[in-house]
Image (cartoon, rainbow, N blue to C red):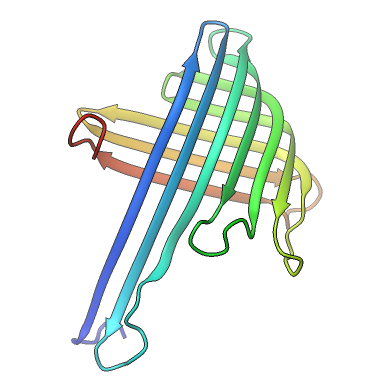
Length: 184
């Protein structure tokens, strides 16, 4: 139990956020990749068999968003986004969203994607309850940096048009401090 005086706990976490953006007056192309991995260990000294680390967080996302500006804050856009796990069951399930709609960028560090025309391809083994479907895609991404402290929050939602059993969402948050030339 966690209240036992002979229990030891530990955790390991790794988050990597990468991006490559091309921002012009009449269009933008935003590309990003995120890996968020974490392991936790709770070891009760009087109980054998629980000595190892267990997966706590396992998220891999890569996305590419292209937009043609209608004005300063709105654009017609297309998005391709792939999400899966790396440690446990790579690509089982894996989600590939391809869609079109609009992107709102009220300021440089906030992006809101609204794609009513989106197809969610699902990759999984034959025993899975997951299946591909048509729906709407909404993504919000907020990234800021202040005096070496960076904050990133990304919410990616797919809402199926018929029912809700196949809808899915991922919310990833990271907080970091830059030690030296972008490494922290």
